[in-house]
Length: 373
Image 1 (cartoon, rainbow, N blue to C red):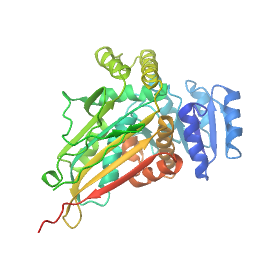
Image 2: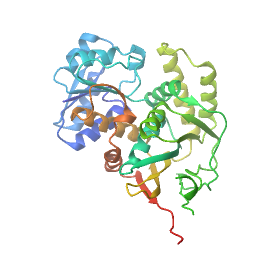
Image 3: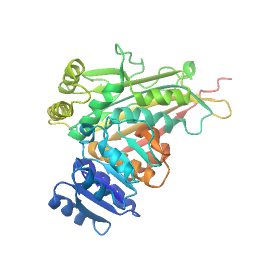
Image 4: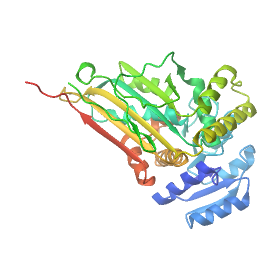
């Protein structure tokens, strides 16, 4: 049994549909509206049931958690409760997956697992190097970017703003000198294998026609750079809008205190509105592109490239939520508190994305230096 708080919201419904499609789970759809919960549960069929729950009421939440192996929190309010939802779920001997960083302690507590979503950009920045590093003897350099155009759900906007608190903003735009390629409904990036550093030339070409390119170092990438022993790690956020970068500039200067849940939710709503204005009249998309230089077990230098392209922002977040809940429920995540980027299974996540989002691309390629002898 997986209980889903906010189970009839945008992210909750996407995650519930993907878990129902995998079969093998019973789903408890929870929220404050009995009518909405029952309507969606009936839509899912025999695998689902509905329950009225208020995440702010500990006794109510404990009753909701009963018989659940995992609670997937898509309510979007956990950050304003400072870890109390997570603490209540863990106290009931269930695992917790939160689709925001709830601001609670990251100190392990008990035998269950807690996994926190820290925003789409940071989650991709932490997962993609792990995906590309599979099977390599060592990795030396990672460079990547993420961006897109489309309405940001308020829930995802909260995670984005919370992730900004732990990311390091770096000065300037040090875009690599590789030729960017743009076309269609979103950026299309291509690696240019050439004659890790000198053999391949510049990594991760950035897209053209961006309103703003921000050079950042997310917490998730810092962690993976340490674990993979990377010599270099670079990450850019590519913003196509004018509204979103302008809002983020204001937020950086005047962002509310970490404990001010109402102010943060108001900022998230403003970010969501800015994304709607930027996306007006355009086809939505999200794209991530990255390169990783490393050595094979035989000592051959290689460059791996990864491309992720999706036209469904909410679906992409829902996929990440659902596979995390799947991994936790199957006992594949150790006890303690984790960030989502570090728990996503590298190859299986890409397979899960493509399986559940049929119009999404998730692929890797590999280039080796040409033998000129």
